[in-house]
Length: 142
Image 1 (cartoon, rainbow, N blue to C red):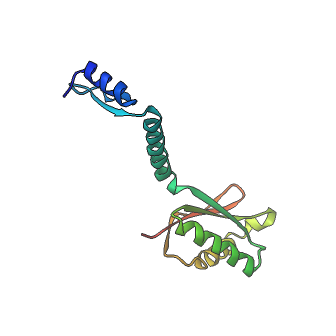
Image 2 (image 1 turned 90 degrees about the vertical axis):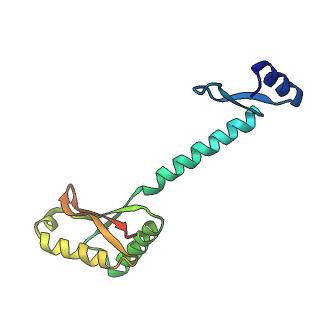
Image 3 (image 1 turned 180 degrees about the horizontal axis):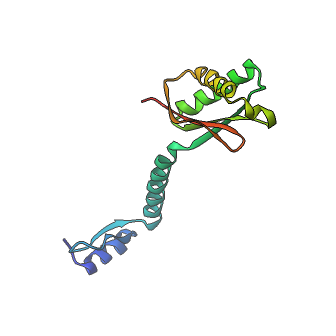
């Protein structure tokens, strides 16, 4: 433990900055480091924390009941990619006009699409009617 004046003199001698890291302890903890380098490290740490929070984005895939089987397979591959990256995926089966009247058929069509998804997954939000169609969410099984 050295005094504040000695630490400042040492910092001037080495051409560095004296940065207080923890002010709440007794005595306070300080570092001899370039301020630019310190700021860069802080930004890097902040971005690392932000990236870990951003992992569970909600991705949305919209399908229609008129889509051909090959179109559904392409959308299912996209869902596979999202699940592999760790995202939660919302699948929306869009219905128009009289299509909304035949719910059983629409739910069956959605079940068929979900069966095309290859990675192990589980339904986090069960299929339910909402807005312009039927919505459900799936996540990757861990």
